[in-house]
Image (cartoon, rainbow over all chains, first blue to last red; front, side):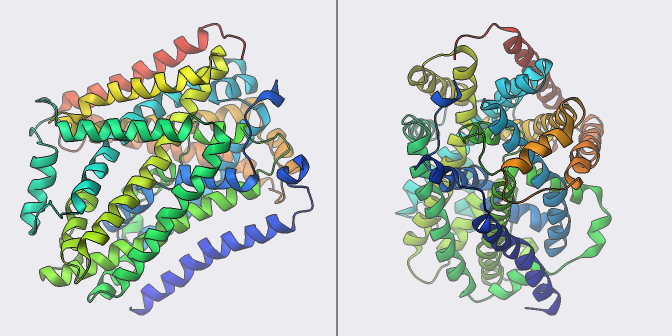
Length: 40
Length: 492
């Protein structure tokens, strides 16, 4: 692949998958109880 | 009353269902095609901006409205503002029309899945084109000539509606379990297709086309409109789906983290699917001795004409990959299709207190009957026309109205306070600015620009009367929405 394509690939991966992992971690660390835990 | 409402089995069921509602043909077929048409890698920049400025703010808004009000779109918006019930009904009738033609596209996938075991679509590009346009669709040549019914398409349509009914009749708890498979299977097949595509000769050329930016196209308004249209379509915004799904969550469930994860997972799926499509197109271009832009035909042709061509050219196991690909289209489509039917069923049940056991089959039968004209020889054109008017005008209008009602009448800061009180991820005043100013301006400008273009040029080379039919349809749906909102409700 050419250089511009690689830069775009890295940019998109950071935004999409990096963002997804970031919010998954934030949600997992959230202090409020999750709904399923509340019902249990 | 809220305690009697159906509930998701777990938060992950809701996330999977919401991702499932958003992941569909929009990711595997529409995103790569729109990207291809709008400058390859350069399209990704307005696409991400559309995700941030409209996709995520509107998704948070719809989750919040559904969860706070615990109602399907009409009831939910009525609780926000008494006069806004018709907007909810407008979203519901729009998504019902959308479901009827979407099911028709699924019926094509059902037929292709059946024929993939024998590669009955032929060997050469010309044969495959003839299979799609003549043998399967029997295209009449004009939307004004409906011609007779294409029986294989009608049978496929019936199978599709039966699958939708079976997926929904057990309620949202079972739906939560079904989506583990209907979201999981497409990802599994996508991984196989991406690996297969990347190992084909010529794949790099396809990827270079997919990812290399061309910043000159950023000055073209149509690229930005295409990006916002794609975000609306792919995230199932303004269809009522997200409101009704969120209404099955307890009132104190997380909103913002769910919205961020759902939207990013959806767009991540689109981006990943692009690798399968463009690597295969690179292989196809090399095999045919043409450049990548010369390989594709029309939007629908990409999936139903070009892909079978690519599958035929695979060195081994063509039948297996053909079956896998159309199984992928089928599961993705079914996943989104039942997410389109659920808001209709939920709205009728909520408004009139009818038994879901009777409402669901009635809606499915009605959907099948309304879809019959799409199975005629002129049906292909009407799928295209309906899709344009429902998505470009209908959904944009609903999204715009939601922003106005929530932003100015209910109060963006008030609903943001509720969101932050239940969410793991706090959202700041930036959200108010998007809901009150940026998103409605973008949607309003998009709507007006598209309308001016329609009046000047018609739609896609079809006769001008089809454009007036489309505009007439949107007006009739608005009138129906008003009528529904004035009808007295039952005891839900």
